[in-house]
Amino acid sequence: MDSHREGAVLQDKPTAPSDHAAAAGRNTLALLLSRLAISVMGWAGTVLIARLLSPTDWGVFSFVFGLLGMMSIITDLGVGRVVLARLLDEDSDPETFASSFVALRAVLGLLGYGIAVGYVVLMGYSGDVIRATAIAGLVVVIATPSNALSVLYQSRMKMVTVATAEALAQLLQLGLTILAATTHPGLLIFILPAIANEIFSGVWKLVGVRRGSVGPRITRRPRLRHWREMLVEAIPLSIGLGMMTLLSKVDVLMLGKLDEFDSVGLYSVAYKFADVMSYAVVAILTPVATLLVAAWPLLHSEFRRHVRTAAITVAVLTSVAALGMWASGREIVALLYGQRFGESADAAWMLLVGAVFAALTQVVLVALISAGRHRVYPWVAFGALLLNIVLNIVLIPHFSYNGAAAATVLTEVLMFVAMWVLAARTLPVDRLLPAGKLALIAVITVAVSAATWALDGQVPWLVNAVCAVVLFLAGAFLTRVLDWRLLTKLRPRKAV
Image 1 (tube, helix red, strand yellow):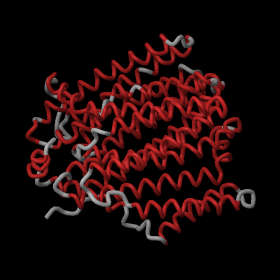
Image 2 (cartoon, helix red, strand yellow):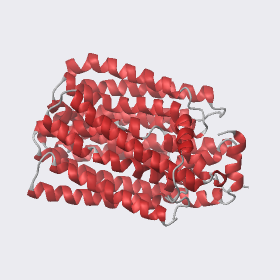
Image 3 (spheres, helix red, strand yellow):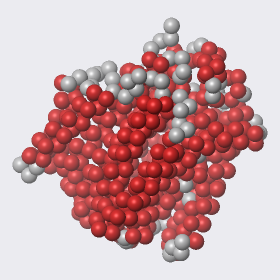
Image 4 (cartoon, helix red, strand yellow):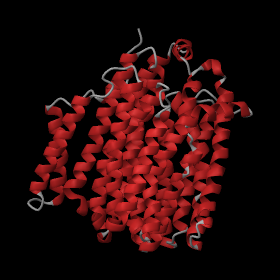
């Protein structure tokens, strides 16, 4: 979208800045609370499943959902990010555009399902894997258009409804998982609650959209010309996001081929901790993306402020998680999943370190997308994917799932550096990232890691973990990396 159109978005919607100012904090808080609740309930469900299934069945369960996660390469294509600005523009017939967008995502969901099932069949996996993929794949079919509905809510800063729907859906899934665990525990039975989750959430969001509570309604016939427009605009972004999805999931597939399903299960447990962090990061960046689209290209200072605040927020959040795992990882994993999974603690800690850099990469990516400067991003993502594959080939045979975790960390670090350089070269915004404060966060993290390592074995593990978090936050406040107004800075200042 050119500068004239982006300026028109702000001019045609004079109430948007004030509406955003009132809603941004509420959206961020609602999404954070929702993601926290979803993470806790999802965690409880996976703990129950991991404890009741055999190591091989848990490995199959993890493999199948890892494979389905990769289908976002097909089902997402970055279209949601591309259409966000169009949905903010009242002159672009948002109802027709929204209807076309949801219909396209529905078609892509069916395509993703077919590819997932076809993959396990063509690769000669066992009947259990094929059946599990065929049933679990319904999650992709339902979730893909449901996620498109979430973008409509995002465009109007009404994510509280989405947060509520997804939290209640996760509660339903947990309840059904407990019911299955107490009646007929089994690989295929444990897949059904995930399908119920997506049905509940999707219907809740669809009812709100049909009532017009988010502005554009799904009432008009989709137009194929809009599909073409969305796909053409999204090609560079979709390639890059596809590479990043492969980057986050390819290690699971490679472990399944280069090692055993038992290792896949251990690695998946380790990855759960990083997944929780990614959910929180998404909750923070979702409303930020809308603010950045509204600020570009006329309000560079606002754009910079949102990016810098988001970077500090996600860096602090992910660093705290990594410190907690460093201090008492084995005990935490064993408490949640059982003693047999305690050995995956080192991999969990490494993946959380990788999550710190992945979160910062996401901040930069959101900024590039919001400014329409993401054309080179696919090449960076492709290079990171190739590096990750090579590192996995070298490290997995020697170190199993720990090797896969190490490969992920190295790749995420280099990916962040490359994205930072890309942003500096393509965005005409000085001091986009708060380099000084990020450096301070790194120094505090290393210092606290040394302190908690010294306390290891001297105090109870829970005390050590709490000390790590308290020491980090104290250091962050003392060095003024953090202040109590940090989250409020995610809201734009009132337009003059």
